Each structure stands twice: as C-alpha cells, then as structure tokens.
Image 1 (cartoon, each protein chain N blue to C red):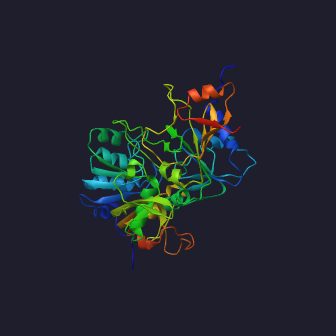
Image 2: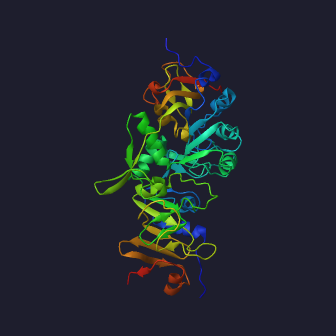
Amino acid sequence: MTIQPLSRDQIAQRVALDIEEGAYVNLGIGLPTRIANFLAPGKEIFLHSENGILGMGPAPEVGKEDDELINAGKEHVTLLNGGCFFHHGDSFAMMRGGHIDVCVLGAFQVAANGDLANWHTGAPDAIPAVGGAMDLAVGAKKVFVTMEHNTKKGEPKIVERCTYPLTGLACVDRIYTDLAVIDVTSRGLIVIEMAPGIDIQTLQNRTEAPLHYNS
Amino acid sequence: MIDKTSLSMAQAISKVKDGSTIMIGGFGTAGQPAELIDALIEHGARDLTIVSNNAGNGDMGLALLIKEKRVRKMICSFPRQHDSWHFDTLYREKGIELELVPQGNLAIRIQAAGAGLGGVFTPTGYGTILADGKETREIAGKKYVFELPIKADIALIKALKGDRWGNLVYRKSARNFGPIMAMAAATTIAQVKEIVPLGSLDPEHVITPGIFVQHVTSVGV
C-alpha cells in the first residue's frame, strides 16, 4: 500500500477533532487558521486573536470587510454574537497567563523534549519577526503544532535537538503532521496515529528523534 | 476650562523633537494613526526611535516615515510582512536598527512604564536568543526573564471618539496598543474620527481615561 499523507486541510480537520466545546483557542497564522473551518458547527468554541478579539468568527461576505476587524494574520474576520474586544495588555495576559486552553502553531522544528523552533531560520539575510509565538508557547495550557513531517528537501523536522533558534523550551504537547499524530511526553515521543499506508519503520526513518508506541 | 482638543494636528505634533522616542499604535494598519504620522512626516523630526508592533505596511503611515529615513531605530515584534518593503530595504542596507521584542513582552514592557514599574519578570522568551544576556530568575519553580519598561516621549494613537477632557473610546480590533501606549508616554496625542461633547461618552464605556491623554485631534468624518 502506498503512503497517503494527509493534505493540509486534512491535518486541520484532524486537529479540530481534539478541540472541545467551551475551549478558548488561539490558532496561529497559516495552516492552523484553517482549523476554524473544520470545527463542528454545533460546538461553541471561543477563538482568540492576539490583536484583541474573543469570539472571532469566519471571514465576512464579500463587500462586508471591515479594515478594523482583522485577525493576527491581518485577514478580515467577523465577530460572533457575544464576542468582544480588548487591548493588547489584556490579550497577552490571556495568552501568557494560562487562560488560553489550546494554541495551535506552525513549526520549523520540534525536539523530542518538546522544544519548539518556529520564528526564525537564523539565516543571515532573514529579517527576524517573532510576534506572539513565544507568549503562546509559554502560556497556553496545551500547545499543539501542525507541520509537514519533513522539509521539502526531505529533512526531518522532528529532531533530537532544534538547530533553529528556539521559540520556547519543552512547550509542545502534541504534533500533527501529514504522516502522524505524536504526543510529547516525559517518556519521549509517542505515536498515537499514523497516516494510511505508512509503517512504523518508515515513519522512524523520516523522524530524527526516537518514536515510541503505546503497546 | 480644560480643552485638550484646542490644538491642530500640526500644533500637537510640533512637540516632537529630533531623537524623540515615539510609540505608534496599530496592528498592521488597524489602529495606525495615519493622519498623525503624515503630520509627523511634514513636521520633519529625524533620528526617531519608534515603538510599534509592525514596521509599516505598503506606502502609508509608518511605512512612509521609515521610507523618509526619519527612523533610527524600530522597537517591534513583527517587522517582516508581505508589504513591509520600505523597512526590509533599509534593514538590509543596515540603514535602520531593530530591537525585536516578543509581542507580549512589548505590551507588558509598555504597561510597566505606564504603571510606574521598574520592569517585569516574564516567562516569555526564556531560554531563547531574545533573552540573551538578560537577568533571569526562578520563581516558584518557573523560569523568568527580567525585562525593562519601555516609555516614550510621545504616543500617537487612533481612537473612534474623544472629548475635551481626553476620554477615549475605540473601534473593534483597532483598539490594540492604543490604551497601553497612552499610559506610557509623557505626551499622548490621539486622533479621533469625532470629537464629542463632554458627558456624551458613557462613563461605563470609556476605555482610556483622559488622564492618559494630552491632546485629541479630529480627522473628520
């Protein structure tokens, strides 16, 4: 059987299954933003945006965009009934102060101990930009990461030790890739799901850090 | 009678001096006081240190101030965006200095200044290169980095409505850094869409109390 890696939308859909009703959730820029499209409509989930929104709703209809109602990626959004606005001090108190239940971030690398690198490649010509990633990494109750399992060159992104500059230390709880769902635990990385068609040895070959399984 | 709305935008901006540290509100263009920045460009002050979340978008507001080479140093969390070409060019030419601060640390350092604190111990950035060389402390088993307050000579912010005592209300996600920057600057200049009569803002809904605001200028409807 050939390996059937998950598409980016399928990864987003998979993460959405793990977000419970009533959760206060911050979705990062890029793939994590798509998770909002897959949250079950019946579930009330509070989406937080770092620029001062709780109860963020989907993109507005064409023609109803408001330049003063945007998300962290500076895309137009809407406000749900019951949603509210607040300033940056309060917004980052929510993030840093342990009030956000789940954040979902993209990543360049995650290490076996949960170290996260997602803001800077360290390349000399790169212009660094960090935004709110470091606050979410230390502050959210659960930190989920979504990413491709390997780089475009085929290098592993789940590593023994991050080589890119760190965002946070030992902060990642769960990793969702196109090939697997992996928990970061005190006993190491534990694979809890694999994409159709992949076997344990192939997954390990594509992963630098050792993988474990609950038998 | 106290009237904080008496100065024109140009008169209020004339308080900026060469070398001033200026906070500029906004997250991207939302909440960015574009008309005040235009007045600042017109005023001609140079060698500025700018504290703002981003480093300008497109060809308006802060991006133009950077393009005109009025900014010696940016203190911000997210300079690089798809439309930050003026900053990107100057940065690569080493024509502008950058102090990169995680966004929550930017906010809390501004809040520390406004609240009269000597700094804060924050967990954000601990163990990363953005905490290199900074004092650290373990408190109740958790690791923290000591960060100094960021204060400013001037804050330029955008609100929806203001009155002659300087009370402000904001609009949607354009509020962002406005309320905390107003507290951290010696002089805060707010541009508002509408100056309203004293007493017409519901006191339960005032977001920035007038004590933090020195000048309110209207950009008209």
